[in-house]
Image (cartoon, rainbow, N blue to C red; front, side, top):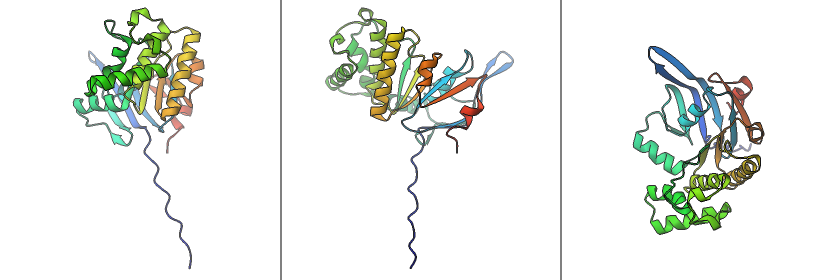
Length: 243
């Protein structure tokens, strides 16, 4: 009697999948194509860097993945869920639960203390203030900022301010982190310290990271490096990860 092998278990959906992703803007009577039909897949837990000249569409790509804008055409899925018909309320819900953001400028509220800034995403989610403060303080301790809890942002160095912004991005425990030039305003030492923290946290949490940068050493440390030129991924980047 012949034995039969069980069918292979189905693979989990990728963290991000895009097919024919396009984004255009109208300027008067002129249509400007920013993204020109991108196809890619990113697996959960991967760190992807995107480099390219200014105006190539890197930040636009992050805005689409982060549900802050809508594509003009094509499909985009996050964790197996299509995003085409999401309402604004659902997009906001997903951003608060699934997606963390880290920008070149820290965007901390100057009138709030460090721990009050970090707990904001949890309070927006509706978490009890005491629990949100406890989680914020734990996260700040993890990133080496336990002695800065009650400080205002203006009392911190640039590197410390960006670590606070990173703590704020991490405290909701996102599955996806989008970073736009996160070390752009930091010196070499501060930039390397942030990169080390980001990589360590991404690995520990199995968090997917998409990182836009002009800094080649930071880009080269990623699992995969993509180049975006004139709204298109270069051929070597385009073929990686596709079925």
